[in-house]
Image (cartoon, rainbow, N blue to C red; front, side):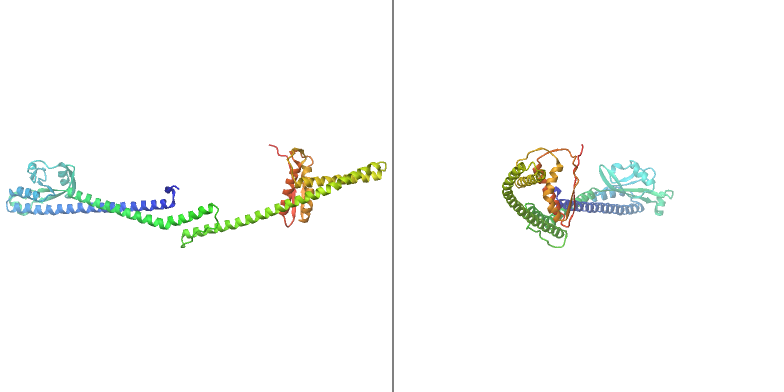
Length: 415
């Protein structure tokens, strides 16, 4: 049996496939949620650092320690491994004023960052630098009233703080988390597969195997076996139905065996009756031949007397008829080798009806012979076909215990 086509495999495959789909969905949801939370944490961290740096810048500006800003930002960048770059650029020109990468001072800020600020999109966003994603944050440094004495009040924003945190650590954490989730998913799937296999073996495969073993024995002819009807589920119902089917088969087998025995006994009786009939026919045939010879002698002597001649002629006809009946009985009791010759089916049927009419009358069965005299001759062995007709008619009569009508017809069919 191909295991791929079994009910157990199909149920197991569907269950495990569903379990795998649900597990993958849960794992993906977990990884996606972890990714979002870590990114949100980095953005919060960027916002916090931006506030701290902004306050430091404002403090240095108020204390007129602006030249120290460059060194403090460089130190801050070195002390925080995730802090990729911190820069302050002019809000209008985009020129970098201060940067943790000293080489950037005096250069222009990235056009997309400047464009983002001009559109008022401050706050967190994600950029990709050197094939690595960064969590960036833009925060304007306002021109506070305390700054007006040095910088005047014309400009509302003195500079823009641009901070970028590397997401490499976040990506590494997400990968580690994904590996753990995949490992957990794999182990869970293996454990669930083993559990499903064990449950399928116990609840599905074992009852099916028991039922198949019983079916195999029944197929081999053993009708004494029965399937166990455990529990009240589908398999118990199936086993009960199968047992009922075996009971019916066993009952039918007994009836067939009994009918076969009856037929054998009937055949034995018919064989014995045939031998008896054959013996009686032989006993009748010899005296009948003597009577026929005597009547032929008398017929010769009384040829001149027309009245007696007619009587002796009728007696000889009846003797010939009796002789023919005796020959037919002998032929029926011991059929010989078929002798095929053209014969009239009407005559053959008439001879068969002669022997069965008495049986039909006792059973109140009326036999109607609709065979025409004009039927063409047919190649057959008349004696054996007559016996076939007799057997069929007797069976038909016995099939009507309450009486009835048996119609016999024959017709020529053209093709």
